[in-house]
Length: 92
Image (cartoon, helix red, strand yellow):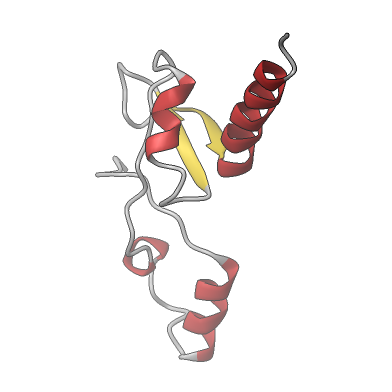
């Protein structure tokens, strides 16, 4: 199975689907929103463009979109930039 894009579904969405009697549906049909994705060779700064849309961003192989190389979280990106800003503020 080759994904056309990366998607996500929350526990809340799964629970709602079950309560609506949709437990026979496939996960793919329940995933409505496509996630942005990044490549491992991009600078971390690129993640700033996407973290407002998604809590988690897949990092996929440049050679093969189906190969997940990692996941970066909104918290990790924002904390990195907050740490850098705090360090710069401490400079004399």
